Image 1 (cartoon, one colour):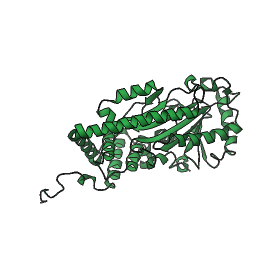
Image 2 (cartoon, helix red, strand yellow):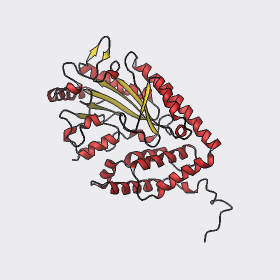
Image 3 (tube, one colour):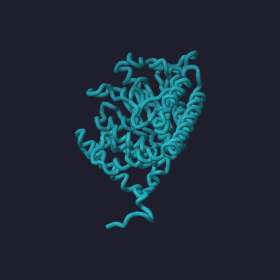
Image 4 (spheres, one colour):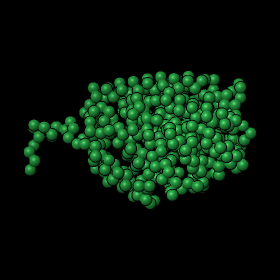
Amino acid sequence: MNEFDAIPDHGLGWLEASGEFADIVLSTRVRIARNLQGHAFGVRARVNDREAVLRHFRSSVERSDSLRGGRLLEMPNVSDRTRRILHERRLVTRDLLGEEGSAPLNGTAVHFSAREPVSVMVNEEDHLRVQSLVSGLRLREAWRIVDRLDDDLGRELPFAYHHDFGFLTSCPTNVGTGMRASVFMHLPGLVLTKEIARALRGLGELGLTFRGLYGEGSEVVGNFFQVSNQVTLGRSEEDLVDGLDRAVRMVIQKELEARQRLLREARGVTEDRIWRAYGTLRYARSLGFEELMAFLSGVRLGMSLQLLPGLRVYSLNKIMIFTQPAHLEQAAGRDLAPEESDAHRASYVRRVLATEGDVSAADDPSHGENAPEKP
C-alpha cells in the first residue's frame, strides 16, 4: 500500500473554515519542542541518539489516548512525493525532510493522531515537536490539544528540564515553555492601504514576528502572513497564548478597517482588482503558484467584501493546498514538469470555481433591466 493512502485527509481539517474570523485567519497552529534526557539533541545528535529517541517515542504511543491507533511514518521509508505533500500541508518542516536532494536522516519520523488534529515530528530540530493545526482563530483550543498530549508523553518520557530555565531546546529562543503559537492570516487590506509595515512593526514591539506560508525562512506571497511569538523564556504558555490572541485581534480589527477604507475611498479600483483576479483564475490555462496566490488574495478579498458572493472560504482554502506541486502530481499520478504543473494548476482552479455558483452575474451592470438583448 502507498503510504499516502493511510493519511489522505490528514492536516486538512482547517480547510473547513469553521473557526472565528475564518475569512481572515485561515488557521491556528500551536507546537511545543521537547527533548529527552540522556540523549544528545540538535546538531550534536547522532544516529544512535535519534534511533533511541524513536524507540522511546514508539513505546509511549500505545499508552497515549491522543496517539493510540494513529499512523507513524518514518521519513527514510516515505516516498519523495508524499514527503513534499506533508510539507505543503505544513505538517512537517524542511529540517525533518533533510537536505534537498538527499534522503532524510535515519530516526526521523512523523506521527499523526487518528482522533485529534495533532501530530508529532520526531528528531526534527528537537527530539519531539508536538503540533496542532485547526481552522480559524482558535489559539486556546489548539493549545489545550497540545497540552493534553504533552501531559501524556511527559508521563512516559523523561523530558530534559532545568528548574531555572524550563524545558531545554536546541534553539535558545525556545527554552522555557518550548512553545510557538502562530496564526496564518490574509491581510490584503493593510497591504493595499500601505499600512502593513506599521502593523508588522507593532507586532515586533509586542515580541511577535511574521513569516511566510511555510514558516521560518519562507517568503510572504499573496498577502498571507504567519504571525507568531518569538520569546518563550520567563512566560507561561497561557500568557503567550493570551498575548498572541490579543495582538491578532488588534490586527484583525485594523484589517477590517482597512478593507472598509478601500470600499469608501477606492471602490472602483478595488472592484477592478478583484474582478481581474477572479477572471484570470476562472479562465487561465496556465498559472504559476506564486501567481495563483496573488490572484487568490484578490478573490478572497472580494468574497469577504461580498463583491463575489457566490464563493466559499472552504473552496478557496482547497485551492491553496491542492494546487501545490506535489498535490498536483499526486492527482495526476505522475511527476509533472513545471509547465505541466502550471497547466494542471489552472485546470484545477477552473473546475473548483465552476462549481461555486454564478459569480459572474453578481454586481454586473450588464445583468439587469438595461442589459442589451442577446443576439
